[in-house]
Length: 224
Image 1 (cartoon, helix red, strand yellow):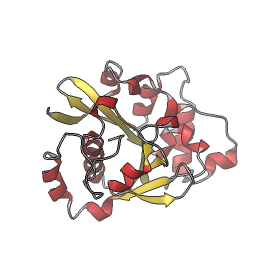
Image 2: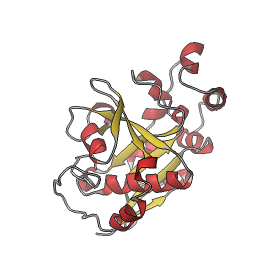
Image 3: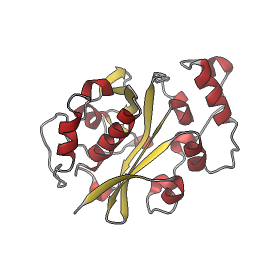
Image 4: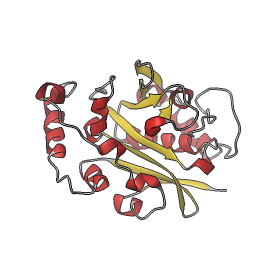
């Protein structure tokens, strides 16, 4: 089995047989007051968020997400899409406001969806998608990645968030704690030195089900 990771456009995503193309979980929005809207945002981010929020609600959410700077990468087993990662500025994910650890830092890129089809979990695919995201963001000189994790779950539980165990095993640390949904962070500056080594290792991650010792190349989470 040969897994490839590549960027995908929203038009392509909508044609793929993967439920992320039809999921609006991160894009659902609720009304919020001005104080909450401003919380944690720079003025520029607040204005961008306002423009994003006023986009036509009838517009396809994936279209709107990509139009305002959101990015997508997919994992493929031949032509079958087996995993997807969505990432972008945190105001592109309106549901974030419902979490107690909101807001993420303004200088970060937020990962919303990291989804792997059930038959391909525990095989290093999630790790490959994370590493592809890191490469993309390092080229853009982004300093950090943040993501909401979920504690005390085997695989994908309620709200389908990524297990904390998987994220910590891949270099993230808890940036804002919460009993069930902490905000985790990966500082990209700390991995620049070994980036070439990890790039070489990337193509040799074993794609078979096994539990490995925790570390930067851990691939034992059920969500991976």
